Length: 223
Image (tube, rainbow, N blue to C red):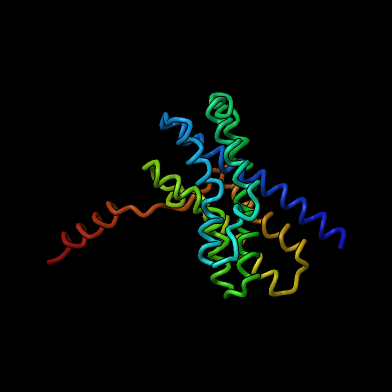
């Protein structure tokens, strides 16, 4: 029991750090658009807690997680204001932030799935809630700033979250201890995302020109 309490306390602290990093990345995106401090804070908040907010709304929870615990909102504001004043320094640790972001999305995918299952939704819905928790904040950020959505990039980002969520459901089905399940599932998602970062792993993009050229050649070979 003590181990479980300590573990969940540690998860909570890591979760706050993850939200802090998400907000930093959001505020950095605002910096690239040369926005004012209020925009920094707004974009940082949306990036940090947007995905979890949509998840809680869809699950119809009694209270949105950051309303129940304002610490999540506070770390978003702090991260955004820090980025506004120290953006040039924050940019220098961009590589470290990528790794920390990888850890954050991995953990949030699994915890989002776990929360959804606690509301007795179907496993497929729980997996979707996990992916939403970890990626939708960044998607909303990109829409606000009118840039290409990170979830539509060929790099392995959403897939890593999907692996974490799916792993959690599968391991849970086989009765794996909750602590080990969270560690293994989030570890798998984190590893995949880090490999994608370091080895530049990405899915091949569909190229319309190739399809068009193929159709042209077919037309040319017709009698």
